[in-house]
Every structure is written in structure tokens, then in C-alpha cells.
Amino acid sequence: RRPPRSTLFPYTTLFRSPPIAIIVDGGEVAEIAETTYLKGGEGTGTYGSVSYPLMDKYGFPHTVRFSRPTSVAIKAKVTIKPSATYLSDVATEIKQRIADYINGLAIGVSVNLPRVISSAVKDCDTGVDTRFDLQSLELARGDGALEAKSITIAWNEAAMCSVEDVTIEVQDA
Image (cartoon, rainbow, N blue to C red; front, top):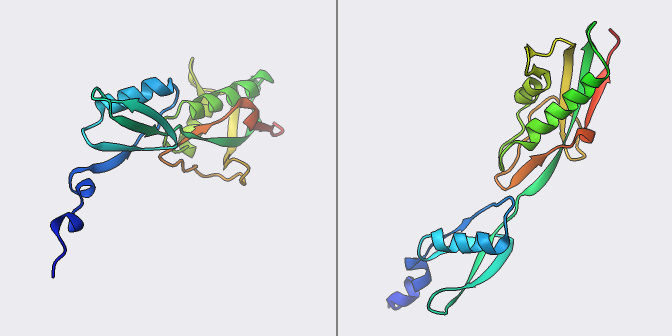
């Protein structure tokens, strides 16, 4: 004998869409929750680690959920050979360029080694900074080992790097 239709297809699985997961960097929790509720499709649930209760216009409670990105610390080690025009402040510029590039990546975007290299040697005035020759560039995720490879960032993570996380090794000319 077959069970009744309501047992086979409960209302919640028949008419509800799967929940959406939203990763939000910045903003006020209440404003994010209200916007998500108003813009989300009817019957769409939300998933995340931050929750905020709302009442609809009929007085029914709803809980809107979303998440903040998980920060992933990125470290870099750059080995350079100075040219005749090299000054000590060049190392600070390289550190800043790398940190700016990594911190400018969107949520979920991996740290691409060739693009980090490009940002390290890029000079806004001439195109390529000729005050040094790049010998190597290695990256690490958190306290991991430095390697000459790109760093994978998950969909709910954001790469971050401070200038203190970038070390410059200057080889003899």
C-alpha cells in the first residue's frame, strides 16, 4: 500500500527552493538582512553563520542568514638582485605593491602567482621597475611553507596581506 501523498512529498520540499548562501564583506547586519529578505525570491531560505530576525508585513517571523568571509593570511618572500639605480626604499614599494594587489582581490578569488609577480615589478611611470631584477617570489597560506605556486582561495574566503607579511631578500649585485 502506498503512503499518502503528503508523506511522499512534504510541502517544504515540494514548494521551497534550496537556500542561498551569501558572503558579505562590510555593511550593517540589519541592512544586509533586510535587503536579502526583500530581494530574495519567495520561499527562498538563507544559509550562513550570521542570523538576523525579521517580521514580514503580516507579522510572521523570518530569520535571514548570511556569512562574513573568512580571512586568509597570505605571506610572500621576494628575492631580488639590485641594479645600479636601486635604493633601499624600493623594497618598501615592492611590499606595498604586493599587499595592495592581494588585498584588492574579491572574495573567493585565488592568489595567482604570475599576477603577484606582475604587481611586484610593475612601475606606474615606466611600466616595469628596472631598479631590480626579480629572482624569485614565493607565497604561503597562513603559516604554511613558502612555495612558488598560486594559493587557492575558497568561495567564502578572502585573501589578505599586510606589508609586514612580505619579506624582501636582496642578493649581492
